[in-house]
Image (cartoon, rainbow over all chains, first blue to last red; front, side):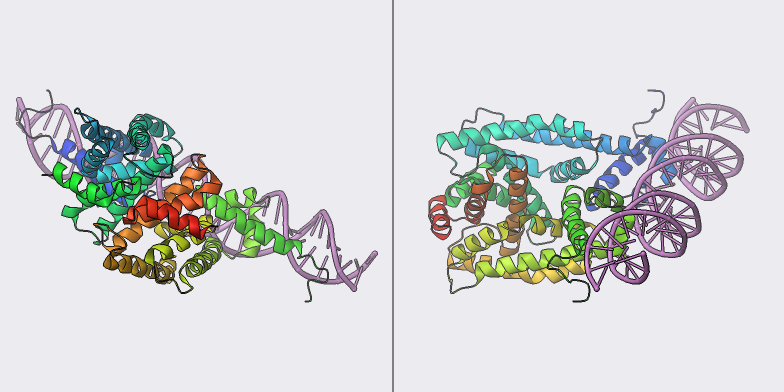
Length: 206
Length: 206
DNA sequence: AGTATGTTGCACATCATTGTGCAACTGCAC
DNA sequence: GTGCAGTTGCACAATGATGTGCAACATACT
């Protein structure tokens, strides 16, 4: 409490937040954006960024921590509750994850590249495997019909989300519709009849 | 014919080919692979690469030319012939493109990044728009049922192919099955009932 | 006013990468 | 063997990015 007497966060904290937000956006556009690019985009000098984060990796790591947390929470929100229908699980998770789309996106975009962040990928796998479990159950119960094994289907779902984010980015898809469309399309890819998928999603997003 | 008296191509040509092949693989793994990495992976010294290609961009550009050509040919092979059914078009194209998967993959992987290769993306858009046309027709005729507009669906299809390539890479999907599974899954995502999709694909890949 | 915290604008060393120049070497063809 | 195309192994300059040090400065809190 020594640094915050008023209710307003100090401008240092504001700057830190701005840097993180801007870094997310910049690294989303170009995973190799330099510290200088990020700093300038945040309206700050490069040296200032190093005042908040000891090095590039620390900055990215902080970003990834937030992303993992956000996605894990969203996914949990989708699968929690006494829902036994795998299709409903997928629909709810998709709608929930869609709301933290950017953060989800940067997670994988960066995990591909940096060698040092390999651990991040591991930290994220629990969520991944939870998703695979739902898909596997759906395939076994016949709710889903797909020639793909559950893990491959999970890959497909992941990439479909990226595709739809890009579609929204490029103005090909209306942002309000996007979440529901995404849910329907993921279900369709899993082999759920579109009519049933549409009805289910409509019911969930009242 | 001054340089090639025997039937064997000179080892210079062999090296050039090796460099291109290896560069494809290396850049697939890491779009920022250095010229040194590529050279060493090709069993050659960096200086030699510069003997074949004046600079990094020329190397990548050559790679992209091949990729564009291969994909365009594959896609054309899929949509040619007197096929009026959009579903069959998608199935045939998918099966055909799947055979040049790596080249297709690097194309987009690199087009995202390099500023100089923006023109490549433009050169590729014809194929892209041909795909969109097929999807649009399918949606209008009711063969496809999707809440997505045709261009967004095209994005989704593209990314799904990447996902399935990765799935094969990671051993989650048997390579022999992969092409057919991909075709079925793309059709399913477009809203074609899985039963119909499976039958169609089975019929095409006899 | 005085103080602490944070920001700025340099300067600097370090490092990796790119592209080039050149001399020496290796095979293969004639 | 002589010559030639291509490869190699340096050395080199140029560039851009990273991370650090330090003095000057601005702002808010006391």
